[in-house]
Amino acid sequence: MDTNMGELGQLKQRFQETVGDRLTRKAEGFESVESGLPTHIGDRFDIPFVDNVTSLLGKHNPLAQEVNPKIDSVWLLDNTAHRPTTGTEHHHQHHHFFHHDEEASLWQAEFVAAYFVKDTGKDLSAWVSSIAEKIGIGEDVQGESRKQIESRIAERLRPLVTTVEPARWVNVKFKDGTVHKLGPGGYNGISTDILTTPGKQVDGDQSENVTVPEEIAPLGDMLTHFAEPEGWAVVSDIDDSIKITMTSSPIGILKSTFVDDPVPIKGMPELYKHVQETLSPAWFYLSASPYNLYQFLRPFLHEHYPKGTIILRDANWLNLSGFLQSLTQGTQAYKDSRMEKVQSWLPKRKMLCVGDSTQSDPEVYGDMYRKFGPDWVKRVFIRKVTGISELHETDKNEPSRFEKAFEGVPKEVWTVFEDPSELMDAVSALKDM
Image 1 (tube, rainbow, N blue to C red):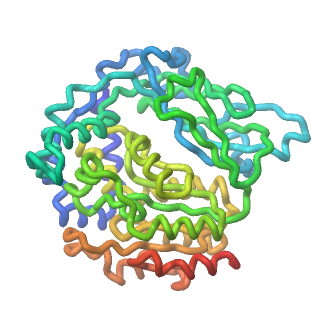
Image 2 (spheres, one colour):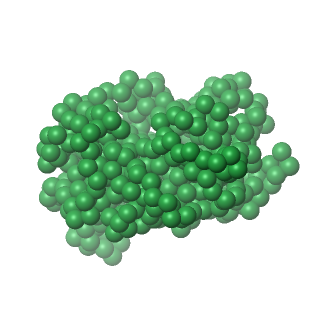
Image 3 (tube, rainbow, N blue to C red):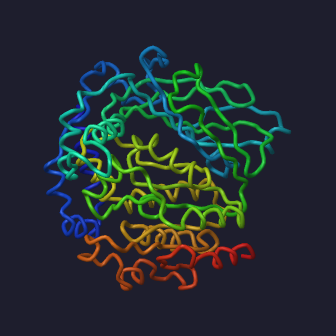
């Protein structure tokens, strides 16, 4: 069952692969690298058969169980609360009944939880050695021993091999003291719930939500950010837009993910600080990375950038080739769907979209402008990624690529840049838009 579900997920990504994806992967030798990586680094056979099967029933699973603090752990992913929009108030949500005077203060948000079995995963030594060899780690690198580097690889690889826990649910306590049930989770060990609750929060507020009991959440509290219908919002890619990932290189992805300390793109923290001070927007970080990297990305973003909601792929392929494919196959279809979800939450917000030239960000943002128009997508900034040899063999940075991606989009809406400082004045001008 695990193999079939994983293959179906990867088949879906291949089906959604664009011509650009295919040409880029071929030019950059992704398949050659993927074929030499370990497969089946995680295993579902440790999960009880009943949980695997009944998890396919989703919310209607009669045999789902509450999480057990002794053997389970839960990640609560930060989210953004918005005012309920027409047609969404009662869509896949827990129903709550309110007095008339409470209806004007309702907030709605999507709550995502990921469930895992504690202290699981195979012996990682073989997989760690494989990654180290593929990257070309020697005995001593910049003052670090190979043993130290392999220890870091193992730490970052661990979330990819930890056994997911389907058919589980958890209680979450809001700041006002009310307790709400999340779940049960599906086959991938992820639950998604839309909750509508009253609250006195205003635009820009943050609220901490905790699991019951708290010790079951190793990443700590989740943050809910509150966004009124109008104002600005930023949708930002992560990899090679604000964090060095080298998504055009399979070896670069492995090295930046499992070996290197995460490094922000020079000038982007200063640019985003200026955006925050100028526009006070709601923030969404949209990445094609799998959700297993959440505990790696969240601290990095909190250190260097304004806090916001991180949107990641809800897939766990349990193999490293699937991890690389997640970042390089079907990213346009995936990001289109997630952008449409953000639009359904905040259809009246003015969007600033930020991405880069290594993936499908220009095509995605062009799609969104053509679909939702200039009232929603106000500005697009695309970072032209240079200095990566693999990009030289593609048309990623060619002017014709950007012209095609933004066909029908006025030139004053989109800007391709290399130095973030070029955009400071453009951001300042948005305040009067």
